[in-house]
Length: 194
Image (cartoon, rainbow, N blue to C red):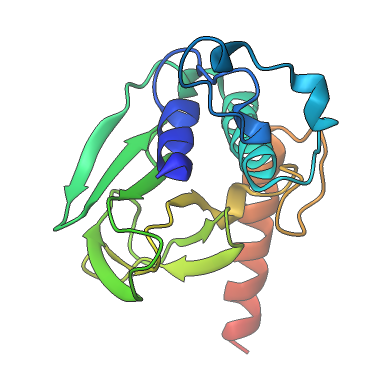
């Protein structure tokens, strides 16, 4: 459940709020535990929550870097399943979609069929697992769920420059990405006709 809360706070509207030391698995329940010294943890950057926060920061910063209007669009729900909620944030076509689950870490694998606002045929990547999914012709995204883990999707065509999932970390612009995608699409169309 901690992962779902982190995804929600990091990708929702406003400034993310994280308890100091949460990424080191400090609990902060009550006095005096809520004032635990973070230096006792030796500040391990390989912890699961530290790595999750780093990934979520990257996707948030990348989406905002490509266009400042990312922050102008409010987060809104797009799907409610039996134990899942999905939200979207950002400009149509470049939006981040997050899927949260109330399933426990001992739950089994299953799939949800979620309507999304990406165009049919759009390839999106779950930036938490680096797995690609393709939106079907009805605008549905068929998402593998397991162990209550969250999912965070972003269009694969805009991943260059993010520094995740094998994509380089660079100061790429939206115009550059659009130009590269147009050239790639034109190349695919011209070679498919021969």
